Image (cartoon, rainbow over all chains, first blue to last red; front, side, top):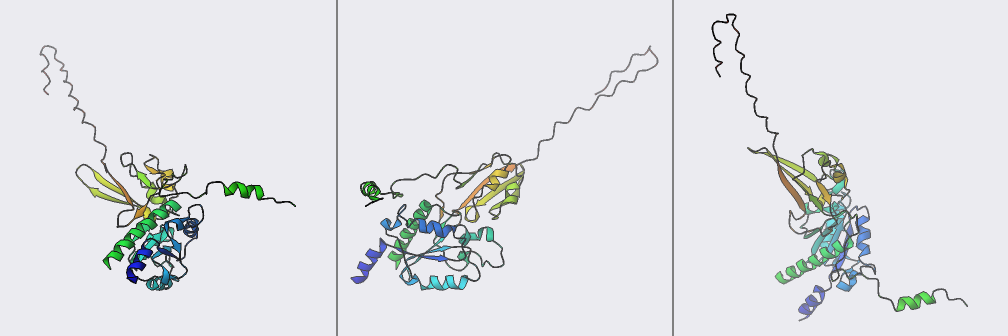
Length: 146
Length: 151
């Protein structure tokens, strides 16, 4: 009974965890912008969590530098299943202009399964809201399968 | 006593919140926003300038030989693009356009690819000119009539 209650309540309010893996801060600022009163994403239930253990959706920004790779993977592995991994901006998808650098460990999809890609450099806050809404749906499907 | 912000506080108390109700109310990007790339393959001449100036290496070209000519496919990977507009600036035929569409979300592979195919054929050779007919050699003897030129 408790499990069902928890599942119903978490379905409408997914918590975000933001990982910066060497980002230029452009995407980070846009992610903060959706939490401001202008876009106010908390009215849709999203909330920025302080710890990966409390999160449902992981938002990764930055081109995954070699220094940050073990930390990113460690943080993602701490997020409980079912989880949804969202890459934000062009960097974690391909490396963008940092592609081929000696200190970039490549796209995130080489290491973990990525559910949603939000393109843009940096993406518009509306596009981020769209992507997170899609991530919520995917999360709901995953929860149904479990 | 001076209360500098009382008037503003009262006005804001009765004004609408400044929150944009985005998913319910659609919002449009500002003019000049550089979003999703649209490629017009019918005007492209395959000069390769866009691929050369692209900082993120987002543009790739594949060439396939066919009987009609070279079948050229140009692909723009939006997941690798910086949206700097340099490719569109350098395109002499204005084949690349960055629109104001910002809804770029990929779930499966290939969702963020924009591509166009066109066939580049070498210009047709002009029709061969008819060979000049040899002039009949005038004979010195005026008595005998000149033979009719054979084609």
